[in-house]
Amino acid sequence: MATVYFDCSSGISGDMTVAALLDAGADRSVLQEALDSIPCTGFKTEIAPVIKNGIAALDFSVILDSENHDHDMEFLFGEGHHHHNEDALNSRHGKETVNGGEEWQCHLHHHEHRGLKEIFEIIDGTKMTSGARSLAKKIFDVLADAESKAHAKPKDQVHFHEVGALDSIVDIISIAVCFDNLKISRVYSTPLTEGSGTIRCAHGVLPIPVPAVTNILLAYKIPISIKNERGEFITPTGAAFIAAVSPIFDAPKNCVIQKIGQGAGKRAYKNPSILRAFLIEENNEFESDVITKLECNIDDCTGENLGFVQEALFSEGALDVSFVPCFMKKNRPAFLLQVICNADDVSNCESLIFEHTTTIGIRRVQMERTKLVRRQVEIDTEWGKIMAKEVVVNGNVRVYPEYESVRKLCESKGVSFFEVMKRCWK
Image 1 (cartoon, rainbow, N blue to C red):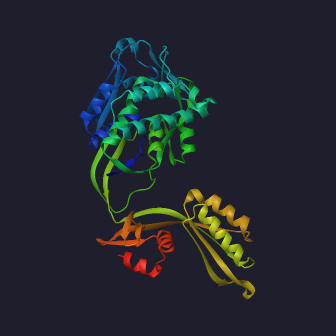
Image 2: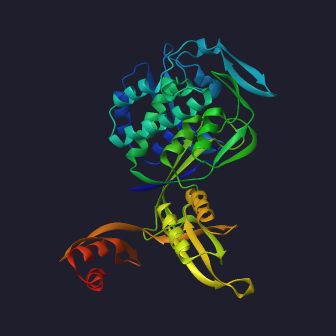
């Protein structure tokens, strides 16, 4: 399985993502087979090397015929977007100044606005693996939630505009096929970078980031960095893809770069509009994450009280709970309560501590940690199977029996806990 690190410092869009994954090694023949099976007509794709600000990258384009052309894409890409009928399009094209900035406009013609049901039917009719199909649907589901909130409509009543157009459907199917083809199981990403100003789309002139992107960033707690530069760097498709793959927003550590894919955007900015996808190999023994430690000193709580809150904290997702004897002011014996938890569980753990103890203040600190990569294994014993954790340390395998599994075996078979642990420890 592969690990990928996305450098989104120049933004992210659907076509940039497809191009970066293809440039990183996704099989073009597998993608073409999927594209040929899409139950829609009137489009073709082009993959070509390009130079962006002097940097070599790959470009992926979906080209629609004049009958199926979705002019909403002009708002995204401007006059550089590919068309079969350029002369006819250019006669309908012009520039408009909005809030002091130059933006592209075109006169919208009718095109089909599909709902989630119709889009899922297209995905189900496309030849792709179950993993790719699941990812494509997840991306659209993220988009549907965002559009539902933006337009105050139930999700099943939302009709997409830009992202419901055929070229965007092809983009998302292509992303899913390429991502699945690379067998990516772990994703890192930089915070997303966004510009400022406004952009004209099917709903009129909208602020950047547009509502759909804003709703995705909010719902999935995606960190962003906003540049003092006019332009839309994050498209809804790009944001929805990042939300769907749930990356770790941090730079990988202790890794070797195996390959780099560079996907070109259609717009020209001061910095090169390129999404980079690094395929990396991590140290297989270690991984890192960020956890939160909560602690408080308690000198007026009973032992029963503290025992109860410990069990409640574990049930709420705490990774570890400990009590350390200490002496406080006026030489009072007390306990230092320490709770280790993930960031998502901080609020619930703090509420439990306030509710079930007498403390009136909780200290909080985020901590980086390094941990051994572990996997669950089953161990056969003469009394039956038990569960254990297996880790590798400096090339040596260690197996740690799980306490609860050993306890249940001892109770059911009437054997010594010490005897089972001695046989199973490796």
